[in-house]
Image (cartoon, rainbow, N blue to C red; front, side, top):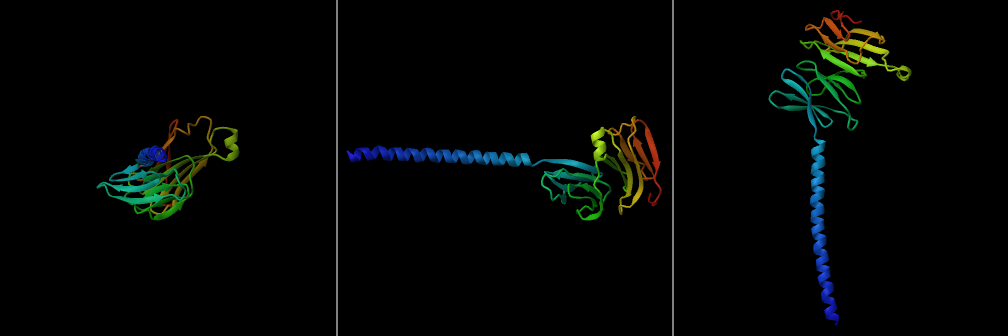
Length: 212
């Protein structure tokens, strides 16, 4: 009688372990698929800026310089996780970078050449020869932000690409007729003229080497 009872218990035990083993394998495979899927979702790559044979590539939250032959060098990783980065190739040896921790111009190895202050809602435009670059910043003070949706801290700045010297600056508040959000900037090939394109095109002369 005891032997007849022990046999079904043994069979039940064997069957239970077999089912548990299958479940564990399926669970491991499911976890592996989930992990692989998560890794695929994290790898996001796109070209942020290009100039001639150089481009800035963002992979997840890191910046890389990519050369025409496909070679890449690490440019920048911000200290803040999941930081939204911006970068613009200024010429064959300088790149503008804005992260969450700092704003600067670096060489192609990511070595900082000079730092800049953080800009708000801005556009950046280098000239064709890469000797200068312009920034159009649309800022507003906290009290003005609460009052209306216009910008009271508009600013145009032109810098020397080589050393970050400020060559020109203009500040003003948005007029009722100005289409600030749609405005765009550009520099002449030699960087001597700045163009602001909004309702109409306004030109500004940039003195050579003299700070304003």
